[in-house]
Length: 436
Ligand SMILES: [Zn+2]
Image (tube, rainbow, N blue to C red; front, side, top):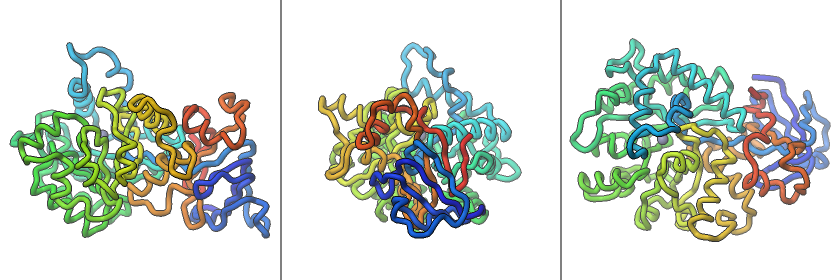
């Protein structure tokens, strides 16, 4: 709770539209009471005014998929680790690090990642959290010990958090969890849901996250989907990041991971489910995902050699696109959406691939980086700087050399396709400046 405040700047984006000299009146709870061009306001600001000057104010970016602790292996996994380096050799190195973390260590590295997210313009993070228990798999005295550390890190730096609490059970079809996966696993769905209920009772925004069809058996998937539907919680899962997952799913269930999730009941509500990656999907999978969201993680997918998501096909088949920083090797929302567009260009040998029917490319990429991520996390009042929403904003410094000679009408396209997060000068979360 703060005092009412007014924010103004040279340029801003309201409802996807560029506005000159915008003004937002924000109440003590950080909600937008009035928004528009300053000239349209009749009354002067009631409270203090924060003028960002020669700046462009855009909605704060939404990071729909993060594993904050993986920030710890930046650099350390960017050299040769195996005779053939791929996703699976990276995963071995990542597990080693995951198993060294104690509660204080998890808090510290999560805080580092969340601070860097704010600096880069992310004001919301969906933390896909799966390091739950002690390295040998025994629960801490409080089974949510490590989840609380994530919550504490988010509160400490002031980023908006949706905790995507992960259910993890096994190494694969008929294979028990590996020793290095034990601390990810709950005893059963009931034990997991007891943790979820405790987090929700404490006011934490929670989403359900069966890790993947690799890590969760079919009856458990069905039970989780039923709970998520009943409680109207956002549901996320890793889907078809690697072809091997599809092969294993076909052998176990006779269908693709997307088809299995559909049969288990994950697609009952529009935008209720988010498939993270969805790289090895086909036209039938895309049709099943219509009305849902795919969270692409382009910097991580490039880093891990996963492949390119078929973003244009997903969009034309009615699937929303959001982005996430995933492994946090790079934390930069502008790079995520930019690389999504560039991947499409490299695949299609064409340009300007993800522009909307009416909207320019910049506005369309901004929507992917903001509103779409908010919806995927179940946040209805985040992602756009319109009346009734939280004032969560990223302030872009127009004096940055990158914008020299860039005109107002080109600023959004330049920002989303030619810039990096280095142009972000301030962030505001719920009306409170949180610039690290
Ligand atoms: Zn992930």
